Image (cartoon, rainbow, N blue to C red):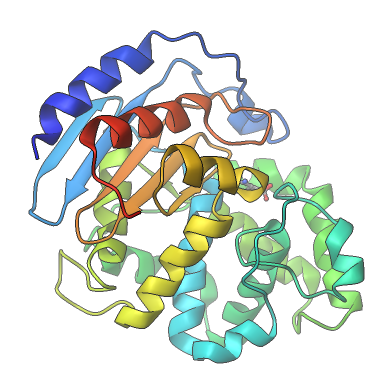
Length: 304
Ligand code: GLN
């Protein structure tokens, strides 16, 4: 498969399309990012690396980090985890409060903000120094010590994080988090503030295309079965109420973030990252989705 030509062709085509989206405005620091940024990077199981555009510039990965916190919680707790968070697509937006009442504080899946808040609580209960240990876990996956949080982004979100504060308190009222909401939220905002480039992102996530084993260190991050399940959740829940659309058009497990990033996995083949800050109405990168749709169509490789 000649990914290089396809990447180049699709990148040039999508770069010039009209983008009706706009950057996330509810987090002040995200609202001021240069919206013309556009980067793509693919890392393959055959050790190919191809990047274009702003692929080496770090950006805020936001909800993409929820996959990583879930992986660490899964390592620590195993299947016990699923007693506190579901594995069903929600059909609601990422920050919705509505289902929690009916579901008695058990979020439908770990990629909703509600679900990621419960996962954050689990990490807080299991780790002595969650902020440092989570970062160490992330850095270790692709052996990249330059990965870090952004205190600027975390503070910016924290100052206006009223919805997440509401979600966390609501879950606490059902008894599905053990720690104090302010501590859980501090950790949640930190993990959402992780920054990396498309190149770093696709390198980092390659373990999910490699049965849970890091391509950089050859260490097992997750078991094969756990890795398969994380991919299944990304496929069914990674884009909130647009997960069906992403499966239909792109056909890969993936995860988006309101920073405009998307990571997608083709098991046994590659991990591909895209960054374009303007989001569609569902909070997913407009150009990111278009690029991946075109890329999987042109490359004619599918998991289906
Ligand atoms: N930090 C963001 C929030 O909690 C993450 C949302 C997202 O990327 N979809 O609202």
